[in-house]
Image (cartoon, each protein chain N blue to C red):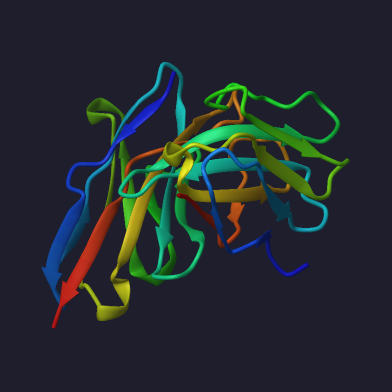
Length: 113
Length: 115
């Protein structure tokens, strides 16, 4: 079975500071990993995904995530936060054998001016 | 259509009543998912449809919950005899194939409040 843990339900950074949102997964088979973002009053949209190609994945809006098998992690980063990045971010895992996606509980990112 | 749509956007009901939530997936998408998002929690998988195959109902929390899908089009999620703990946002997503790598496109959700 798969599961996802997101450390920190709320993260607050200053504009221009590094964004680091943590995601650890549990999977008995090679996982596919995803980050989704939910802006206020909008639906979830895909930010980036890892599907067993390059371990460093670049997504939209300057975000990237690195798959580290040894640490079972897929942390999301952005070098410089922008006010428009304020949203809730969800990490998710699926595998090749199932068509279920297991989501973490989400991290709300607040960006201070 | 341009994206996944869901209706109604908000539903307030009394405990014990039945409710029906609708999802219109992106045209041509064979896979459709229903999730529940309780306040302050992550998405909880409910049910998955893939083409004409039998749906994966393993996430449905009780027999009060059921879902149908006609072919590769509209899906309805029905909750019978609603309880207060059913209050949540119900999200629908669709994707173009059954492969786990494919991107899911989410609808805006239906916010259900059970009084």
